[in-house]
Image (cartoon, rainbow, N blue to C red):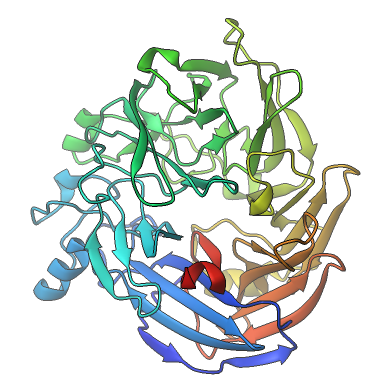
Length: 474
């Protein structure tokens, strides 16, 4: 978890095995990587500057490129030659005034010819997909009203529409949520304002053909606490886990319904779709305990990291119902999982396969060796999982006794391939050698076909996406 702080290029990276020729495009991922040591003691590990990696794969070869996002924070701190920004999402702890303090370090995606480096506390930064040059803060040519932009926009596979939202959309501590969408051409379509029942984290959301669903994590914000030098977030075990359901097309502010479930931590969404009876099904990991244990409750209570378990769960909504109390979520995978991904061609539709990170304690991971060198704060996953939702079978690929794996992405074998027929790619942290590998699995056989051996170590990242060469060229 030490900073990487590398910018540059590595051409024709070493490959073990054989990369299938149909894999042609770029895997972009972003990691929080502090440019300077923080002046906050025990600073949250993902309070680092956004650093974007690009793995360009073509003709069985890989070219690697990496650059920091030139945010206002990054440029001001480089000029001062020291850290200027304080606690995570608390401007009252800074030692300099910034117009925007976002680090753009959570997700990187391709839309309308630009890369967008996103963090949910501000607007995205646009980057050049080829050079990774930062083009500047991006408000979609003045169309965006919200002060914030989600790190998890969703894309309609049929229309190319990008479905988005911002929470705390009128500034820190505000309950306002702005829902908006952009057509493939970058023009705004829907734009409606909502008010959440509590000022809470909405890290991810889900989209169906006709609805959007906003899961509220019971990490709540208090401006008074922030002004006193405290944390932006504090776990609240006394409130429900809210799910806001809003019509996707032509909504009004009063159309949102806030369904309630028991207090829990909803993780990253896998997918959502509408059933034949009009109900909505959403799959996502859920934990009974506070996954972000570094932000405890008001009494300082937090679970031990070893006690955490997020299980892939299914939540069903009836958007026509006036009963806001939801039935107990159905657990569809008993393993401890996170970062679920699907074949994105089937987003917003009933899906059969789900790919995810798994922590399987029965596998022979050498935790004593890893713990001595890795540092803390990052969820640990020792396997890649493929879940067949039809049969319930979970296939696992163990990444090694002294390795941990990051978020996977799925690459279709071809545009016409069946769902789940393709490749799964993920970055692996090799703690024995303190280096990083990119592994590529054949999803059909669920076996390794290639391993890209980087000559350096990358810090643990958050999210990334695969962009096909034809989409980059369009």
